[in-house]
Length: 403
Image 1 (tube, rainbow, N blue to C red):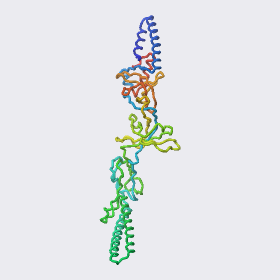
Image 2 (cartoon, one colour; image 1 turned 60 degrees about the vertical axis):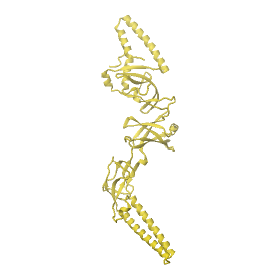
Image 3 (tube, rainbow, N blue to C red; image 1 turned 90 degrees about the vertical axis):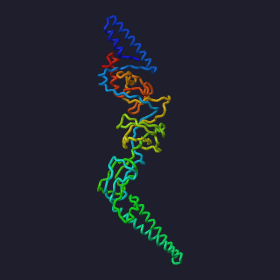
Image 4 (cartoon, one colour; image 1 turned 30 degrees about the vertical axis):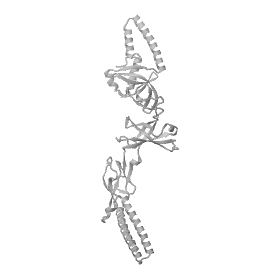
């Protein structure tokens, strides 16, 4: 362990003494530095602990604007990073359209509102609906007439008045009428109208546009007075309580991934938040152009921070470390190169920071995985580490390292 302030103080005392004493002090200092250099070389060669300290005055601490966080650990080995995107589960997403041509009469919801399964989103005035109701009534009457005729002929057949051919013909007519009635009834159901609602003879001209799922109104394209055709999208409904992270993994990396594997990722909207999920599915097809396979990660999203269409930076390959330990994950900015080694500044006191030598296992986007040097939970400088490195360099030149 080396403390630059002590070396600076010793040099100052030596310079203040007599020439003879100064020469002795300088010679002693050079000898100590040679010994210390050999010691440091030995420490670096054997990977032993090597620390230097930077102490900042209250004024310098304010100017530096350092940010300190606890080092986090993760079981990770052989991991790799890739780009990804956020998407909705198709089972939790719906494009709602009109079932038939018409004109939008009312809009009952707005973008961002939460809706229930089956809730009415809008109503559409449609001449086709009136025709469908009329067809329902007509087919209902025909079925009733055909049923009564078939029943009457069967009775007459028993009395020897009607023939079997007459009965067979009546039964056939009844089957046709029944089929027409069922088709007309189903047509009303598709339009969102209950068949029994028309039994009183009222011919409604409006039909409701209902949401087939519970969720949030992501988009509302409908406008009052708008003419619509069957299949034209009016509303986009999505349930964001759970989303998918879709990744394209190169064919050469397929051996590193598998179902149930943990995945961590970040998005630009919340760069300091590491989201987590598990691989739910590994694609069965390699895309011929990109030579990639799609992976699906199911991600809980109760707070709805993850939005469909977001891009993400994902980190895969989170198998246990070969040595059975855990890798410490720090932001890339926290790791500085100093005198040919990688260092992380660990806060040892409110104004004092130790330059800890670390061994990097791997780099993944904005994260660095450390195999040695930092213990999970230690307070490390994640912003402003370059400032501390500069102060440390000043101390190496014999200058005072903090102001």
